[in-house]
Amino acid sequence: MNFIVALSCEAKPIINELRLTKQFSPTPFEVFRNDFHQLVVTGIGKVAAAAATGFLLGSSTRKQEVQTYLNVGIAGHGTLQTNTAFIANSISDDQDKAIFYPPQIIDSDFELSRLCTCSDPNQNYEKGLGFDMEAHAFYSIASRSATRELIQVLKVVSDNEGQSLESIQPTMVTECIYNHLPSILTLAQELDTLAKEISPNLETLDLQETARKIHPFSQSQIFQLDRLISHSRTLIIKKRI
Image (cartoon, helix red, strand yellow):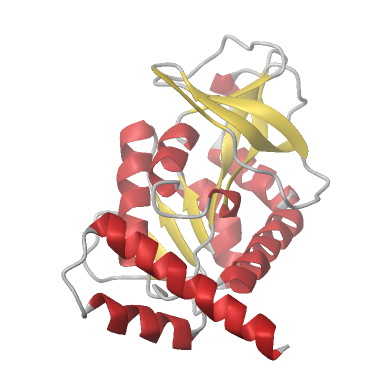
């Protein structure tokens, strides 16, 4: 699982629970890893989130496996109570017409809500809508390279009409994430399980690599070639069964 988190106070519970180790090699972002998970602290805002997500996509140490991505953090909301966790089933942007609809294929107890990514902190709490500053940029970049079902955004409500944005303290943010940590990690595990089910085996990967060397294929031809080989391997497996 690849976690994309804007703030250190949001990342702290995940880092501690999974015993992630900070990477001290020169990188533009703070990166923490163990054998199975990777977390990047992006900083606040769309540009930072996009850059960090792109960096994570390019620096994966498990390139032969299907990757999963989870953006975790706090958000304002026009309806939900503070300390309520929700998954974004619609992600819009205050300066971009594109709207993303992350497919929801995992059953969970999390609320589902629309989410709007804003260029500046938002205190106009529209009913039924959450507000953050990173999710749209994250999803826009991640969805170019990863399976959309395996890219999700989970937010915990930190502010609403009853609790102002100015009242939020780092310790409160950390507590918000801690309160939902077991469910967050369960979601991450379920996404990883799905990824393993669709990951190509090593024999298929080797066959794809060999086939690419036969001819100088274009990128679109490589995509079609890989897909045909994967499909043929699936047919062989089914025939054996």
